[in-house]
Length: 322
Ligand SMILES: [Zn+2]
Image 1 (cartoon, rainbow, N blue to C red):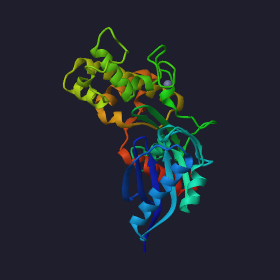
Image 2: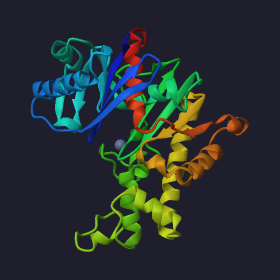
Image 3: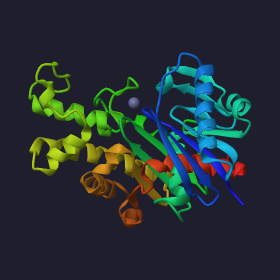
């Protein structure tokens, strides 16, 4: 007898990851393709349907897909199966992903925001396994967040609960992509770390983008700033310490507001490991109520790039959880 499960699709900004996932959370087959941009919603859905059909037919008849699960970057109404806005795929708005894809692939389709999928994946099979509640910080180019309680995402009244990246942690701080100042995202994201390091290399020109000439010699990615800090660059260390402290304040805020059993930190920037999480946890501990310091649990995520795919699969495998 063949295997059963779901096709899970994680649509990120750069890559699309597809996986055949069994009910037990085993990924039987994977594929990664480059994300594209689209000028029309129909074009996006047709392209996705083709990718899913091709993936399934290459897997052969031994695998029976029961549903398709999509993790989408952008605010999503998972109950209605609709993506409100998808900046990564061509600034499309109001995409009826579940009903549109269902017509094309002939399978039940569930859709969820990618940060929520990652949190559910970690809750199911990763660093949050066994916890009743968790909050996930996804620290990458921007900062996402998601709160999971008893296997369900807490979405809030308008579906934006968990947007920790746009909570203000420094009044009058650096300008954020959302237009405000001092958001956590404007202080801790990869973008912020690179911006602050560049500014630190140019005393007196703080916060201003460098001219193109000479920029080649500067690190363009946050991981290079971490590497420089490791090899003793004082300015890189200071930038990372500042970012870590801001993250620590964000963690303490979440602890006070939601008091989750465990707080997870994932995303590209979290790959720096202890260099970021060590000082961030220290800052968070010093900022939470004294008698509760020992209760704060901060961990790195453990599923890496599979988290979103597995969390999407988790949703599709049990409809009651939506
Ligand atoms: Zn913001």
